[in-house]
Amino acid sequence: MGLGEHTELGELIVSELVTNSLRHGEGKIQVRMPHTGGDLRVAVHDSGAGRPVKHQPTVEGESGRRLAQLDGLTGLHGGRRGLLDNGAREGKTVYAVIHIVPGTGGARRRAHQQRGGRHNGRAGRE
Image 1: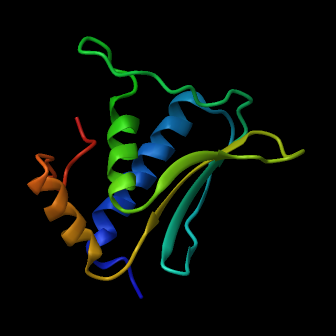
Image 2: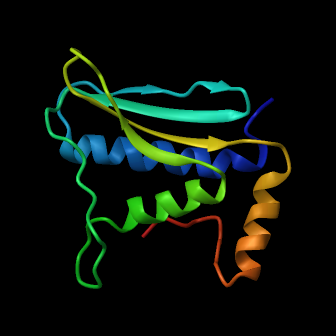
């Protein structure tokens, strides 16, 4: 089973997590995207010692908006974003996971729109 209607969301997740790793991490970046049991997990690892800090987006600020949007979109698809415990491994691994069931993405999007939300397929891009 492929990503189907979840392809754009998968691309957005990879783009945002890799961009943050490039901006705030160090060393080589590794991306893993296992798709098992109806879930897509995107895990991005870099060698940087710092840990992600969640910022509240502000009108003037440029930090935090995209991850806040990403959190909202992953939540619509039964997912979440987090930080894996790497144990003794150097660096950090940030991940996002979404639940992929054929035909549910559009239904969730429609339900969200009916509640007053908006999804234009380009959410998270400024």
